[in-house]
Each structure stands twice: as structure tokens, then as C-alpha cells.
Image (cartoon, rainbow, N blue to C red; front, side):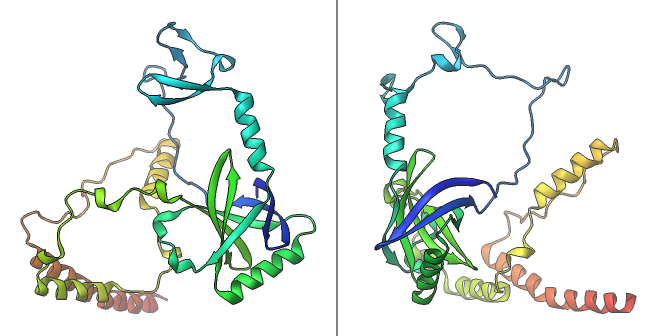
Length: 275
């Protein structure tokens, strides 16, 4: 695994040299933009609209726009010094909390933590302490020139660091428009909705969820690579009618979920017969 950060993390007087490795990866299919006439990839240039010319990398400086078209220019040396001052600091676990006390909206990105040279014993100690206490550690870390709030927790046999948003990065829920009041809920509709929730309740298994769009797009790409003719499906996804009232939709959903066990049973019998 590629190392994205290297340093040390401490709790109390215990110091652990560690490396961070990205725990997740983006599997979105990246499509290039080509010139339609000749299928050549399109290039992008950085152009100054005032000077009307292309700007080279060495001619670009960074700045903060504090009001419309008003900037504070920051020297690269100043930025590098700030970065060095923060990255040189060891990451200290500030406090320990329970995982359920943090709402999932705060979580951002996950990193596997591996012990660096000589850190195995202290790493195992922290892992055991977190596991036995049922707590997670809260810390601060600088990754790619950005200070991040983070939590450290046990994941399998590994310590996992998850960066989390600072409170001012989470927008105020009171600003969300058009939220209906609880008084608009009809009891009969609620009872039916709860029955539907119960029917669809199961144990979470991440392995059964797949990205259907990505799979279909890759199939399309493979077919076109081999020169096969692709015929789009005429049948679109089932869309609920806007005319159907809420109670009818809930009841139809319940009826649909009740049929599923019977269908699975029949499929199993057929599979056994074919076997």
C-alpha cells in the first residue's frame, strides 16, 4: 500500500511511529473528452483574460479572495513554512470518547494505520486499550497542508484513523428549507410505514451491494472495444406514478416485500432440481 503520511501519534507519554495508508479508493470510471472530428484528447490551458495569453506554472501565485476581486497574495515560502511547522509536530490524541457520540455526518475519509520501525509494541498497546475500553481517540493531524480533526479506532486487527469535519464545516440543519412538521403524519400511514420498515429490516452485509451503473458502463465499454453492436434497453426503470396516493404506495410496497420470500424459495427449489 502507498504511504500517504508518515509521522508519530501519542497518547500520554506513549509515542508510536506510524504510517497512514488510504483505506478506501474511488472506483468511478473516468471518461476523457475528445475532439469529435478526430478523436484527439482535448488539452486545457491556463489563460489570463486580461493579458490574453497562456500563463506558465512558474508565473502563478496563490491568493485568498477576501471580497469580490480583492486578493491577499501568499508567498510560496510562507505557505511552505506553515506546512513544515505543522507537519513536524507529532499527532497527539487529545481525548477519548465513544464512537456513537459522533454523528456520521462528521466522518470524511479513512486511513489504515501501520506501525513504523520500532512502533509495534506501542501500537499493540493502544489497539488493546481502545478495544478493551470501547473508546476511540480524538486527535489533530496535518495531511496535504490541511489540518484535520481525526479519530483513531480499532478496525479488525488494525488501527484506523478517520478524518472528521470541524463543527464549522458542517452546515446548520436549521437552514434546510421546506422541512414538514411532525404533525402532518397520519397514524395509519405511519403504522403501515413501520410495517414496511420491519419487512425490509435485515443484517447489514456490505458484500451484497454493488455499483450497478459502473458495471453496466464497463460492460458497454468492453462491448465497444470488441466491436460489438450495442442495443440500448427499451425498458426503463420502474417509476412510481405521481397519481398514486401515499397510502396506496405504502400498501403496494408491503405487498411487494411479502412476495419476495416465496420467490426466493421457488428459485432455491429450482436450483436444487437442476443440480
